[in-house]
Image: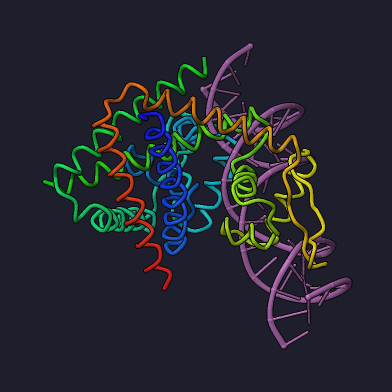
Length: 149
Length: 149
DNA sequence: TATTGTTATACTCTATAACTATA
DNA sequence: TATAGTTATAGAGTATAACAATA
């Protein structure tokens, strides 16, 4: 039955989601940040200083929520609100030195985690797995879009 | 570089985790339950009536947290607290008829979701992907255990 | 003494709605 | 008028600590 094989695959995927979430939470907690706040840093690190509206759109959360996340990051010294050069309503959320250092640390830890997770795999195995992940992501995005409409 | 291929694989895995979480949240919300409460039903459905202590251990959350989750499930009519036959301190959290119906509905939806996600895959592709998931879960469980010690 | 589950308390994350300052 | 971000308010989920009832 190909059906039961699919169900087993999804079960494992969901299990993996839970384990990955738990591991990430603990790892991030050791670095003094949470799973909700970390993506704020990643977006700014990748795209440069952003307004809170842009962050809210990128992360698919409400503007009010971003206010709270940024408040926390400011209190912990990882970002600062800089005046927007052309719009006095908006603030540009910008990485501090500590924020940049944290992003670098998170990236290094993620690299080490990757090595622990996939280091012993044969290239052909990794390639097949990656193709599977690709297809699943694409399929899932399509499902979400068609559901939303 | 096999290294960059691993990093790309983990990136996709994390992306998949986010998408899967979002989709699950919405799907569960339509059924009138949350991502924190649903696993309570799954455990009871699979293993029979459980004490709150057992649920807390199974789900790796605090007993206090289980009190709140069960309170919500009781209020929504999906479970009831039955007296424990041999321990008057404990209560056995038990599925109601509505709870059993909900679990059946969730299982059916998950099956349909599986078909949408993997239905068009070739058996060989699915098998390779599943093996990859298996290995990743096992490796991750091992990492978590060694970290904890 | 130890365990079960509660009350007390507190924090994070999330949302909607009303409001202020600016565009 | 419209937009950016705030205050006000509310609710879910999470945790620790102190406590009552029972083992």
